[in-house]
Structure formats: structure tokens, C-alpha cells
Image (cartoon, rainbow, N blue to C red; front, side):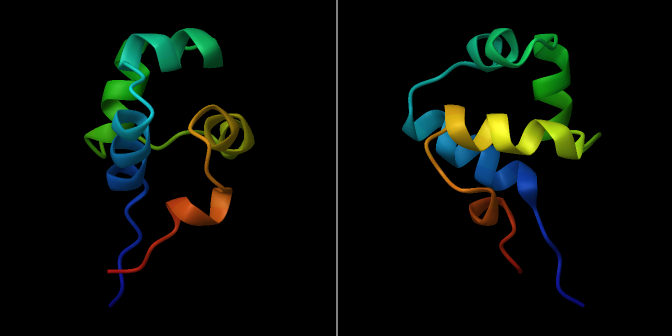
Length: 68
């Protein structure tokens, strides 16, 4: 079974763009704990956040959906 890991890509693109969890959280209007939970796969971002996350991290929404 293939798994889709959004968290790994979020971390990769966030670090590549030198954005902290707190900075990303502030730009999205969520708490930094939410970003931390998303990146640890404890929760996933609501679908309405994906376009904003992609724009902030300079990637496309499709980039988050990589099959393993």
C-alpha cells in the first residue's frame, strides 16, 4: 500500500525556504503547535490551508502528495 506523507514535504520545503514553524504559523493564522503536529503526523492541515501553505513555501499543492 502506498502512503502519502504531507509532513515530510512540509518540513523539506519549509527548511529549504528558511521559514520557522512560528513564521509559517503566523502567516497562516494558526498556532505554531499546529504546524508542529502537522509535521509530526499527529494531525493534518485542513484542505483549505493547502493553497496558502504551497504559496508560502514556493511549491505546488501537488508537491505535498508524494507516494512512498
